[in-house]
Image (cartoon, rainbow, N blue to C red; front, side, top):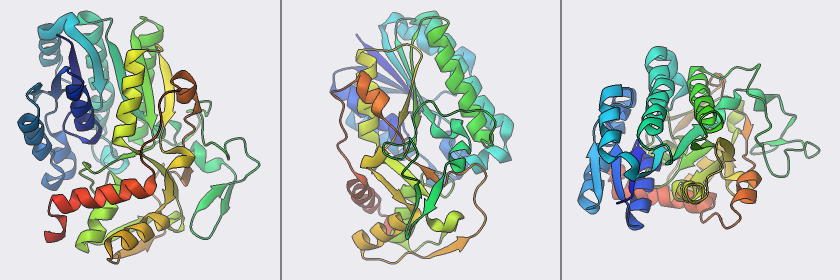
Length: 357
């Protein structure tokens, strides 16, 4: 019996991971105590996702435990022991703004929770792959010091810069910049996962995501910009654009494309390795471009206002260079571009009755 443990199993990446591995014949244990509703309110609850996973997947079992609870985590890992083939850690407090409200909670979830999981893995299933969804926010606001050029609908990188053709690679420094407290807590977890691979020889991998999205995203104002943008367009809810003339650029990767990356690593781990993962030049847009596509695809107008103040640590332009991952796993390919992603998010919100409230 091969077991996969997925933390944050009811979130976007977690639920996609659960379904992917269940379809491959694994028994999947989901760890999720719905803290998203605590972070962002009841409308961001992922309980609907838990119920759907339990209904759809007979090989799925749910553990509503807190990843910071050493005793509960240890008991769970002891139960399955060396049958655990992989630990896929997607649970997190994911918001810049929320982290500043409760810094201790943010750090304990993102950093301490990761450490608890690493120790349980080292103790009970040291050969298992440990895959961590980190974030490009570990680079802080360093990308904002790149030579950017303003265009009609977006900021772009000066074509003469080495990152211009393919995006930002893993050589970018994480030092000497403003991260936001969220960026710091995720950087601490990121380094821990690397260290358990390098120091203890565990099969750990770090995936520094850009914007991770898809039709199953429960986007809110403080997290999941593309999903929340679509929701606002469908419902007429007011949307606020923060700074940079709305021309800030994000690359967006569909959750299924990211999960397929995790699968490739699981099959052939590179211990302690770090990968930038995102939509790259294949799938990216500015805020203005995203709003335009939402309006075109829904036939509705956005209700939005622009605010000059940008969020602390927010990126003006970020596109991921995924060539390192492609070099290690050449069979991996994208299956979604930005237009396909937005159309699927629209369909997902409509299926949940977003236009009725």
